[in-house]
Image (cartoon, rainbow over all chains, first blue to last red; front, top):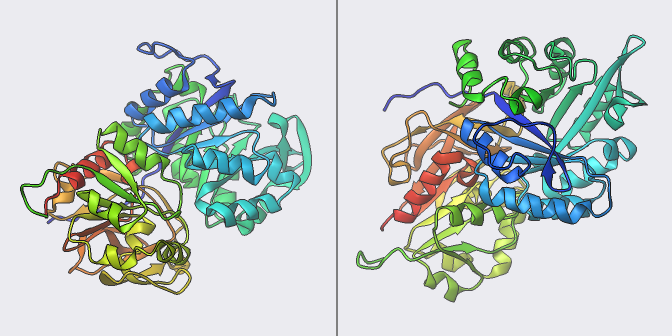
Length: 257
Length: 205
């Protein structure tokens, strides 16, 4: 028996925004019957070779929970890869409902900033592997500061120390979005990602700035992150996941093909 | 089980260790019939048994004891598959909660060593070096499986049917007679995982 080298693959993660149980933002896959159907879209991404999916619930109403749970169940029935649900999770009960509906992980952001003990409570109740802490960061007056509400609201937390605290409280993974790079398509914030990654012992997902396949190669080579997340470049078909995986592989980055 | 008996269904041991929605969904997609197992009589009804499990191995063992099914499970002669913590339960002992387990395969479940410069948990897709075993029939040589775990089963060539190296070499899958265990999650491992679930359902012992 030959023994190929084992390598934990670097993960490629498309992120889908969901409102009232429907995916939003333009999606132009040619063979989709209904681009707003999260289940169909998720299945398509899985087939293309996405390693994992993140669904971000941006619904603002109180009715949201029920719709979201139904969506999560539908996704879990169809999808054969792991997925994370983020948005609006503020207490244990929210997380438990999502777990029971088949979510592999949940991602918390502002609720954790407002009440850091939530990280600890969730980790104790469901295991660290279930708890992703999402952090939106922006460079302000020479410092990296944690922001809420999609970058609109600055907090008093410095990004590096908040992430370290989240790890200590029981975060199983960090999803770090650079608000300075998000939407620019100019590449990930490799400097900050490397700095943070060197300082923690849990996986980190890079987010914000993906515009080309080279950007993915760069973030894995320079910051050695565990995963890279993007939305529009995948949704608009600007980067196809099979091509991206081939490109990464050519650059000796371990990926699942 | 005698060879004339048809592979009729999988019984999933229902002992409250983690959520099994994804597992049952995967079986449904593969059109493999399943039911929950709550009693010894339920164990008899199925041709195959799965022991699922997510979370803390010591706590999972306590929950399994509370079902009163420990001795009946150990005595099973039909194919059994432990998944993740369900696999770890097949071993003698886990460092997680310093717990004595089923001891079907006399190997140990250990905590990853941080000093090896690895991130814990081991989370993500990894290829495995699998042996010529019924569980891996038609699985591509470099197929990858999805892992999420902080404790691992020590490598022992007697029981190992698939190994993986993360920090150190350990068992991704084991077999002892009719008992199989996989550390990864076949229900989350794409087509390779679905193939493995089908393979398990086709195992005749």
